[in-house]
Length: 175
View: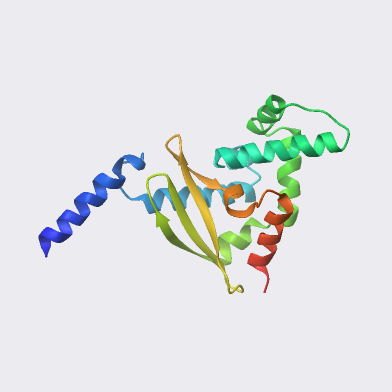
């Protein structure tokens, strides 16, 4: 029995050890900490940290949505300017996140939801989030990119459009 436990721990450590830069070999702590920090950053209006904790796909989708909306409104902007703005918590970034926070209260996910770890592998993880008044959970996708666990906001909520994201959020927190 002891040999089986030791073998399991050894395989677990070597199977996941390099995926977790803190060297603990404990993926859950790193995944949960990064995800929680994303929502706390939104709550504190620390948009730069929130931006840096988003997956690459999420960032690219937000940038594309802003470019598309700007063009539709008759304005013009370019990708590089938007990236710089988000990296420096500029006007576009602040406007985007404030609008986001008008429809989403981070306290709901931080204080009113139960978080459980789902599937974990070296590059992807899932956190099952269930609001206390909801019957169906949402599976938050978290991705390891450049050695950092990042929240897959788009991967979790978008189905190609922001209104799908908002609808899923509304459904998550609907009583």
